[in-house]
Amino acid sequence: MLAVCAFLFFVGVQAIGLLGADEPRYAQVAREMLDRHDWVTPTLWGKPWLEKPPLYYWSAILAYKVTGSVTGWAARLPSAVFATIMLFFVYVWARRFRSGMQLDAALITAASVMVIGFGRAASTDMPLTATFTIALLAWYGWYDSQNRLWLALFYALLGLGTLAKGPVAAFLAAVILGAFALLRRDWQIVRRTLWLPGIAVYLIVVLPWFVAVQRVNPEFFRVFILEHNLARYTTDLYRHKQPYWYFLPVALVGLLPWTIFAVTALIDATRDWRYSVSEPQGQEDFRTLLALWFVVPVLFFSLSQSKLPGYILPAIPAATILLADFILRREQAGEEPGNWLSASHAVLCAVLMMGALILPFRLVHQEIGRPAIFVAIALGVVGLLTIWLSLRAQGYRMLRFTTLVVLLIAYALILRGTAPIVDAMESARPVALELGQTALGEISEIAVYDVPRGLEYGLGFYRNRKVFSYERNEIPATGHLVVAAAGTKSELEYRLRGRRVTRAGGFAPQHLDFYLVSAAGDQQPTASQ
Image (cartoon, rainbow, N blue to C red; front, side, top):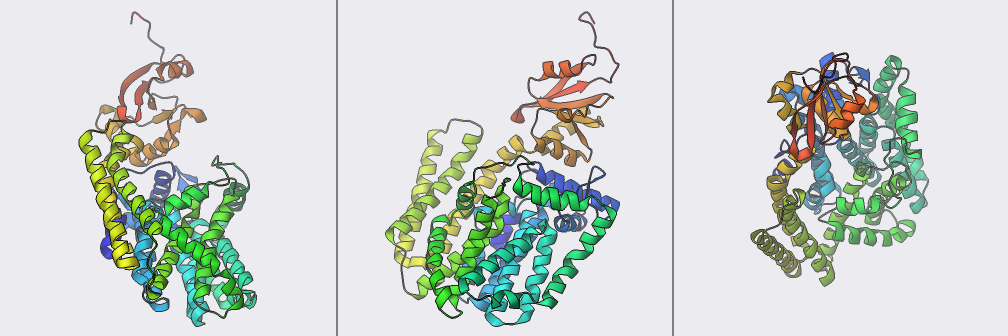
């Protein structure tokens, strides 16, 4: 488990610079809190940034202190640590309550695409997922054993989940457990769960920061609760509109390479819901809880007007733990996976390996040579036959091992071949390095024009300076550098009439040009000049 977690979450995490707008933005907020020695108010470029609670920022501050530097690698360290803690808790919990499935539960959860991706990201999604997963497993630990220490742990971790991303943690837990009580036709479950000492634990964890930040920032309730929770869910205020079925393919991709077996386990669990109504407490309850835990977030966020992939990350561990339970029960019953199930899973894994080898060529729009095609086909065939024959000969006991081998090979190929290309094409880090290697890096004020938002925030983090945006009419009056989409010089000259615009370089992988802009009032030279 240590080896798998180290490889999936830590090895090569620095191969790709911070991506998108959120990663560099969150990393910069943590840096500013560290510089100001302020653990209450998150700020971005000196102004309060109240979109998210502080758990990720606090964790990143500790990572910066432990590593001794503010880097993209350190900014991603909290998510990797949270993911590792979650997986070890899953192992220990399963050994106590579902002995025999603990290694499957932990490693299948670790080796799912969405957990790997967000376990290496500087974001709030993995802290929420880790705390939420531990909280719900702790609740079932109480439900199964009636030991209230588990219930206290449930409330404590639910409080940390609220500090990770807000009241959505408590809301989702309430809906899942309410639906569970409804299927059991036992509302005493709700009454007994609402344990006053546990609620006190939750409030002790949550209230100090919420009260403190509200006192310092009177606009906090409006910005955080009304805008970034309610308005984000009910409107397309932040322009993340997606179709209602968006999270179905996201969930299927996020569960790779276990998708086919995970869907089978989910269908099998839904058939057991009838037992949850009529039978006494037992393993059917556990499967019912896991199925609800997966379905409720997917359905809830499908109704949201704002959709991002990370929203359903807390549902993924439910499906992977459910699969581990499914495997254990099938092994105990002496059942073997059917031909179509084994063949479908083997084909999917083979396609993943082939895709990992071919992906770098597609990213750079390079023709795939015959040697690469032959290697990809050979790799896919070997993977397909290995998995299919192993499952047919040894049954479910080989599912985890053979699939992990294929996944780790595919992942190693991605780290080796795809990661450097993604870094060059998507991250602001190589752009900042390009600027720093020239005299342009000494220019204090930088602006951007017609580029992705991720580049703006990424340059800001890597240079530790605010980057201005022409689209927001943030045009410095002094001489400055503009990082713009290639070929936009005439547009800049039109916007900056009366000021010199001189191309001073560029960054070809991202189709960027660098332009020097003179100070306002510095007249454009004549043609003769």
